Image (cartoon, rainbow, N blue to C red; front, side, top):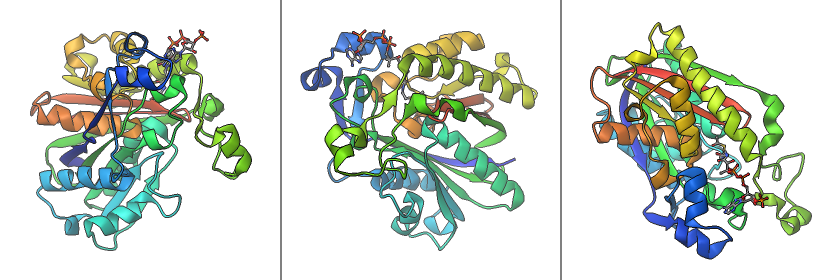
Length: 325
Ligand code: ACO
């Protein structure tokens, strides 16, 4: 199994509060706080983009691993908000960091589960051939969805998180990863315009479809709770460990009520679940690696801890990983 050698994270400086949202659209701090637990989120500055956020998190992880960009053998980025349509953000990042001409690829469209899915891919690649893989979750969602649709806009923020995975024993061992997909729910959470089914054109721009995130919030909520708690139980079962042994669960940070429901379903007390959704909102594929970086940085995770990561997103995709620090 692979090991995690370094952690990195980055969030833009600009803080947008619920009160600021209430000045932009018909909402209130009370509504957002009660429904989601979110108080603040970060917006990328005009001179920032998916690439700059990813590069900041990547440099942190590479440094934390005691490596240089020349030591990276492969790059995989999970993002639904790429720097450009073609090529992938990972290719641009390879050049930006000054890496060798190593293979790079994006996992796009996996929504918030993308980072753990990318870890799963990296884990298998390392099992075939020892190498150092830079794995990133990054989103600049605030630039890709409508900022006038109150039902979705207030939920999201921008951030990036990164890890270096390798074959040598290091900071955390990946004990196991499970992931799954149910494509029958694709229409419940989707952004259809801009693909081949509905290319960008004057009519999609005029109707506002080009950045309309279609979301059935209640169905997403129910499935997110079910899939994240089941995936966490499944990964623990596969690696022969129990919930009682888990020091910390780092769930996808979409909504405090979802996190609380997952915690209760898993039978965990609140101190064993990492929460930062109130400060950063939902940063898509970045929530889990960014939260893990913060948990390591603030000593919420210590040597010997068993940590479970779990996420759920558009697709529907879901995944969970068990890590032994
Ligand atoms: N401010 C004020 N009112 C709002 C807002 C807002 N920002 N957004 C929607 N409303 C209104 C709606 O118009 C609707 O009004 P109506 O009843 O007059 O039609 C009402 O609030 C909706 O209320 P509820 O249906 O009771 O809202 P609910 O409790 O389901 O909360 C929410 C909605 C927060 C979206 C919730 O369903 C949720 O969090 N679901 C999960 C969705 C999610 O996390 N998506 C992120 C992407 S996927 C992922 O990361 C897992």
